[in-house]
Amino acid sequence: MRREQSATEERCRRSINTALALVLSIACPWTAAADAAERPVEAVPVAASQVTVELAEVVVDGHLVMKVRGTASYPAARRARLITRNIVAAARDENFADDDLTLRVDGERTLLLAGERVLHEIYDADAQIEGLTREVLAADIQYRVQEVITAYRHDREPEVLLEKTGYALATVMLAATLIFGFAKAFRLLADLLDRRLQTQIRTLEQRSARLLRSRNLTRGLRALTKAVFLALVALTLYLSTQFVLGLFPWTRRFADWLFGLILSPLQEIGRGVLGAIPDLMWLIILFFITRYLLGTIRAFFRGVENGSVKLASLERDLALPTYRIVRLVVILFAIVMAYPHIPGSDSAAFQGLSVLVGLIISLGSQSIIGNIIAGYSLLYRRPFKIGDRIRIADTVGSVTELRVLTTRLQSLKNEEIVIPNTMVLNEEVINYSARAREQGLILHTTVGIGYETPWRQVEAMLKEAAERTGGLLKQPKPFVLQHALGDFAVTYEINAHCNDANNMAQIYSALHRNILDVFNEYGVAIMTPSYIADPPEPKLVPKEQWYAAPAKASEAADTTPRR
Picture 1 (tube, rainbow, N blue to C red):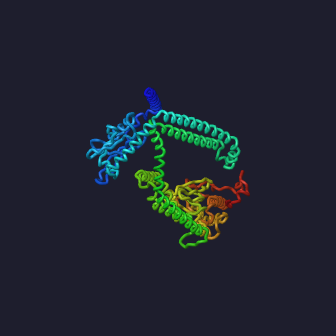
Picture 2: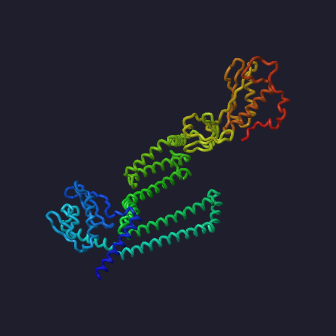
Picture 3: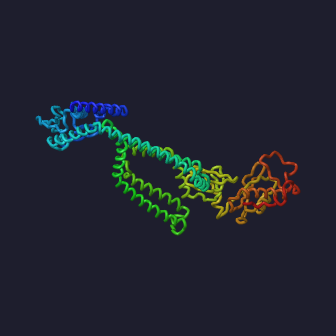
């Protein structure tokens, strides 16, 4: 009767084991052959011979039993697979008791036996890798294999499998409950953001001059909450899956792999951070030293700029650009000192990336670097200042801004002109204001007068026109030069000093108007460039027509230039 009951229990046990194995193998087909899968091969040096030996792991149900070596004709991976199959076969043998493992010395090897079945052969070379004697290693392996066989059989008992199945179902239900709870909580949070934060978001939008839109802020908050929700769901699924797979022997190895998928990178990062702590401390100290040094240099040049610190060789206007150069030198020096201590700086990838970035900068910033060098050259050469009226090539205007990369001018037509500093450095620059402030700028214009008019009269008329023109200096006195004796006329040039270069256009216009008036008053005709014959009457404007409509006498008489 007991034998029949025992046989019935055995059949039930096998049926349950078979059913669970089938379900788990369908759910996780990649783990069906987990016990017989090949483990990564490890290479270690042997201390005695300094020869690298390959080792393979013997793993049963995710438990590491031992590491074995191989030979050229019998690789370590093949030997590990054979030992794994022997241990699994012994564990499945119901006639073999857990504590019936024996050791037997057979010449130069020690045999690990399960009854009469040989599970493993231990040689002196195996013990040499561990640094143990063959007897000690054999005893250790015997104890480890016995533990693995006991665990193998225990994990497949129907009561244990049913208990772990209950744990798995509870874990799945708990994970589903958590995910449902997360979804509801974040839905309530999204509604709360819509109701409670709209007023604050609109206030922030108004304070930022509508640079921040309430719609964009709301979308950003929703995207952030959604990302947190997805992260929590993924973490829940990951932990629950890893726990459920770790309950059963058929999937335990995959659970270990899944756990190592996250743990291994974290371990690598942790070891990297711990190994980089000395370099990080060095970088932190260098950062604070550099920061303190830059603060001291900045305070010094600010003193030069505001006049509290006086240097004979450095003008106040050059304090800020000089500080920028010194700051750049200090930062570059700090970078050179910090580079060897940056984590990963000695790796080929980091060095290759550094070369690539340097190449991109060198190819893409040639014009920028050229403008920077030209800008600093202009700052120290000082060919002009802010407010000067200058000419660069064909462009005339007042300097409004001098930057490292560009120079800005305000043209005579109130246009803003931006000129690259390389062009300023390479072109001819005429500064009308530099001499006008001290000695006066000489304004000049020419007229062509016939030979029948005495030259003394012409010079007197031109000087009178200059004296009538506002904006021209009385001292030094205006003077006239006879430029050329042409075929039909003499070319006279009136020269007068002016200390207001920014109003040259208005002063020239007033001077030309006065010349026309004076020559009309004295009845002298101004010759045209093209001459055929003397006209029957002089080409003059009668005085009674000087203020012909729509001209007004008050406006025509005002020849003083306006700023």
